[in-house]
Length: 359
Image (cartoon, rainbow, N blue to C red; front, side, top):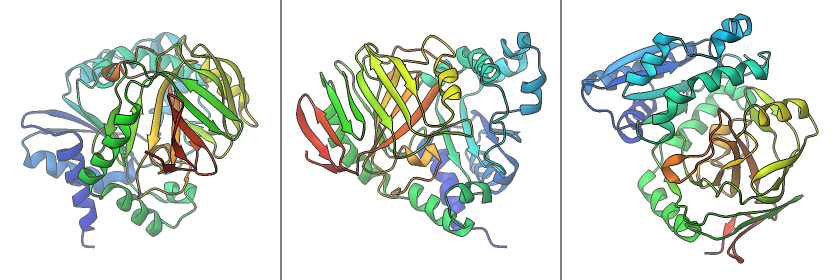
């Protein structure tokens, strides 16, 4: 069969615009087996630019699930020396998510995953600090299409419609939004069962066009770590993490940290993750969805956090390159839809109502 021309465009976007690969770079290319067409396309682009393609295939989104479930805790607490060497020496990281079953790995105990994530944190720091480029993306599979309530062909069209857009034009629009939020003394989010405030004082946002996530299309911040107060309820959509859906997650903050946690489903899982380390219960990110090609929730955070007219809050790790100081092995994005009557205020002034900007 002839190659889909959109696949080649996608590969070039990842290599050139998202991570800006240079000759001689060692690029870790991680994926699941169904992503082979995109892995091959990206590998061709890397070869043409004189870079090394270090392919690694995983069967589960969580990694080697069989090993994680059986390994002694002593092994989980320390990254394998060979793995540490790879992370320390690669120049770039490309992760292609292409699950055959999006529930793979949900039977791994959260405490074991937390140990594994903590072990790798120090070696992943250069990526968190934006010192080394990386990008996470997806390749259309029947499992992802099914989760989105689409046929595979519909999901392919949706994915390419969200990534093959005019990123320069969108970046200009997002810059206007960032200018309004940068350094705000107080941001207030009002919505269904939600009234939350936090500060962005002395913080500058990141305008994410063609960058670390694809699809992209967001403006995001690391709020001042002790500033969040109030309640947020993620009543519209489930909070999805490691293949599990938490319905109706409700978090109450005092001075930046969650003091009350509840949910309609998977509450024990939610509590476990947010107590897995000292920083997991702290607000690490505030993001604003801006991608015009994404208008519906699909139970797929990479897309859902970019829905135009939504915001998302991430519990756990902040971003040092934009001033964040909170450290955690957890970074859990939860999406709040403000298109249903929600409001955003900056220093007391209304800037968005029902998903429409009032700038």
